[in-house]
Image (cartoon, rainbow, N blue to C red; front, side, top):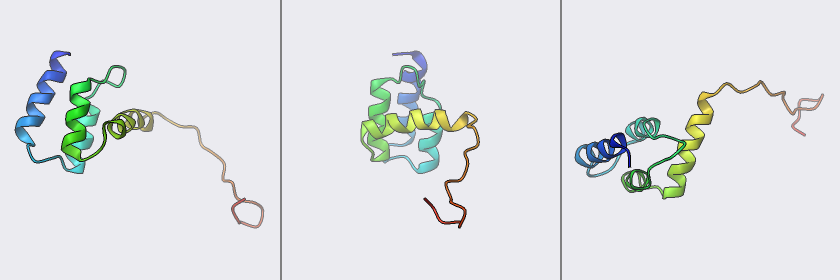
Length: 84
């Protein structure tokens, strides 16, 4: 476990013993390394947020992909304006 993961675990445990609100959860997700998320840290985030661990991992990976630029996609509407 990296020192930053250990520090984050200690801070989260001390500051938020009764759970995380949505804003603090998102901030904590931004501090997790997506290439090697620490198991103890993701377990703690799951416990504090009321989510399952796999949901926390999905949020970590989804959050990183949302920050990347995505190419514009065309609308899937037909000529009449109705969805296909």
